[in-house]
Amino acid sequence: AYADAGALTVELANDYPELEYTVQYRESDLAFACRMMERHGISYHFRHADGAHEMVLTDQVEAHDSIGARPFRPAEGHHQEEISHFRAWRPARRITTGAIRLTDYNFKAPVAAMETDHLGDAAYEQGQIESFDWPGDYLDQGRGRVVAELRAQGERGQDRRFEAEGDIVALGAGLRVTLSGDPVPGTGGEYMCLSARHSYTADNYGSGGSDDGDGRAYDGQYVLMPVEAPLLPEQKTARADVRGPQTATVVGEGEIDCDEYGRILVRFHWDLDEAWSMRCRVSQSWAGAGWGGMVIPRIGMEVVVEFLDGDPDKPLVTGCVYNGTHDRPYVLPAHKTKSVLRSDSHKSTGHNEISFEDATGEEVMFLHAQKDQMTRILNNRGARIENSSVETVGNNRLVSTGNNQQETIGGSLNRTVGGQLGSLFGAVGAVAAAGGQDALAGSEAVGSKAVTAFAASFAAAGAAIEAAAGSARARFDAAGNHRAVGGAEQAARTDSIASLLSDVMPMGGVMMTMVEKFRSDTIGLARTEQIGAYKNTSVGHTMTVNVGQEFLINCGKSKFVMDAEGNVTIIGTKFNFTASGHVQINGKVIDLN
Image (cartoon, rainbow, N blue to C red; front, side, top):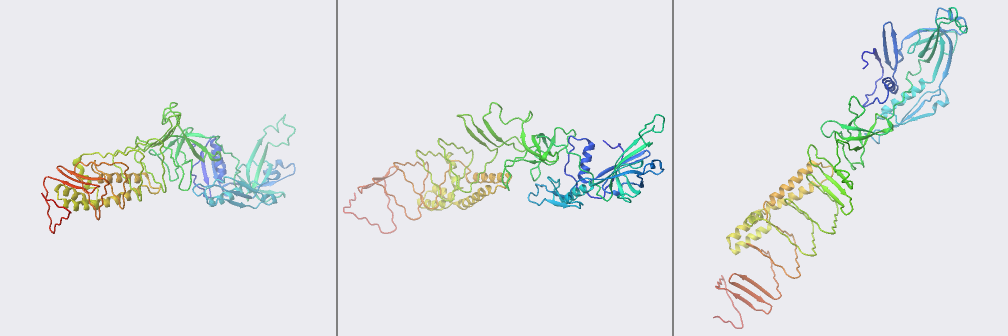
């Protein structure tokens, strides 16, 4: 905008930090430029020439031109001398301090030492009274020392002033002059002109001229300072504070754009250039060391922004608000009794949700997981359901208990395992281990080819099942690892568990029960068991069956009966007794018909 405004010369001797972000907010271009230069100790003046003018930015005395020496002539009557001179010279002082103490805070290094101070060389006792300021406007202690020194030099530079009058037309703001002539304090010293006021009167020597003047057509008033004093501008341009919070729109790349600190970019509604802000920190419900809340506003959201200490250069996002483009999760006011926390799947249409319905008599806590839900409990878990519980598993289910399991049912237990009978053998063959080996030995003793084939397939899968069970346990444990594990890794482990279950239980209609050491069943009245095709029982050592009244076995036309009175009856159409050794029959009476 100011490319053609005139020549600009930059004569800086010091290095200056690059600002991450700064805003010109409710201030003119001149006020903004002055505030920035005052902040860093840069002054400006103008060099004038016939047909050419330039603005000079500098931090050193040498960049200011000198008009040479001018004498001091206090006596009246010297005003018509050919050499321009000072006729009045009045010293002045300001009460300043040379002791500066500053501190600040940098969230990237919250425990870093930030306090700094600087003791100047004020020539009077009160000059050591400390001036403390917060924030110091720096990010580390090293830069803070520089800022404190600049503040101290700025105070010292505002101390000594000289108010002068004379007819030195060539003397203007930003020029140096050496005082010579009649003895005055400071004679022979060089001074910097800070301001000059030039007054011209054209008719003093004409008829009707002023009677109260002394015939001077030109009169100048000047404010000067010693060139030995630090040349730093006074910090007098006030910053325009932001009064209260504002809203802004989240911007950035993609759908979610944040840095390692969770900071986001916003665009303020008043920014006509639609520029992006600095990275803004986002207020969270909790923010501990590796724990707390974490919700990152997404691009397009309208957020509430506050400004630390009212500084437009220090925005902080404190919340989000809905608007005409971003609707509420549920229609209002129809769902005014509902409290909701709903997320949105990244680059997709799904969501996760926790919601609470507080309508009287309809209170509900609802949990929705778009894909997987993982729960890790390091100690105990308790659940009490006062009425009924319904759980539906669409595919497979695996429960692993490391020690004991107890289940108490006050009424009935009805368990149905579905599927076709024809798939029974293949499914069982993919699950059992040691039990299969015992079944194989028992089937060979029975001699049935069908049972033998069933038991062989049952035994063959033993090693595979043991390995699969160990793998399942390892994968399930890993899926619930420390909270730092990302969602993608947890989802992958969940998929592997689901795949394993599909391998172990490829068909319906199969139920397996494995007890490592001991099992006891107690039934108060009766028990019935029905098996559609085959049953095989294998006992490794001893089997005992105790019946109180009667023991009965039926197999077609064959029957075996024992009762409590000691009667044993065997009924059949044909008997075949074969022994490789001695056969002995003992009885009080033996009747062979």
